[in-house]
Image (cartoon, rainbow, N blue to C red; front, side, top):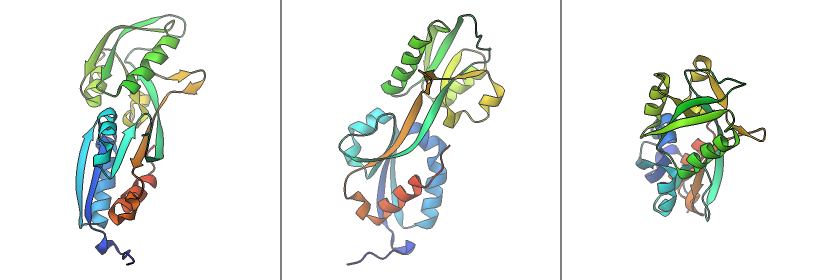
Amino acid sequence: MELAKSSHDVQGTLSIACSSLISQRFLPAILGEYITKYPKVTIDLVTGISEDIMRNFKKYHVSIIRGEKLKNSTCIHLFSDPLYIFDTEEFPKDKLKERPLISFNSDDSMHDQVDNWLYFHQDKIKPLKMMTVDQIETCKQFMKQGIGMAVLPESVSDSMKDEYPHVPLEVDGKPVTRDTWICFQEGVRKLPQVDRFITALTSTNFL
C-alpha cells in the first residue's frame, strides 16, 4: 500500500537523541517548524553528550552527534564547526601567553582536539590551570569576566569574534573542527515521520 504523502498523514513517534550543543542552538527552531508542519507526530527527545548517545544509538530513530561518525549506521554530514580560543586579553605574537583555561563538559574527542592543538602551540600558549564547568554557556560567561581562556565552536560564539581577542585552532595550516552528523539505521527512512525530519535537518544551513 502506497503511503499517502500529505502532511496530515505523517504521524507516529519520532525518537531523537541529540548532542546538547545542537539541541540548545539549532534544534528548537527546526523542531518548531517540523511540529507545525506535522502536528500528529509525537516527539521523543533525549539530549546529552555524543559519547553517551553513541552507546545507546539503537534505541532511537535518529542520532545527532558531534565528533566521529557512528560505525555500523548510515551517517550524513551536517556541518563542520571550526574551533577558536577566546580571551579578554590579547594573544601576543612574540611571547608566551600564560592564562587559566576554562573548559566545559564535553566528549573526550573534543578535549583530545584541544590538547593536541595546545601541544603543537606550547611555545605560544601555556594554560596555568584547568577549570571545568558543566555547560558551554557557563564557560562563555567565565571567559567574558576575564577568568581565563576558553575554546569554543563557531556555532556558539555569536558576535564574540567581533568583541574579544581570539585565535582559530589550526594544525598544519588546517582548521580544527567539530563535525556534526545525523546517523540512523538502515530502513528507518521508510517511516514518513523519520524521513521528513532527516530531510529537514539535511536542508538546514547551520553556519
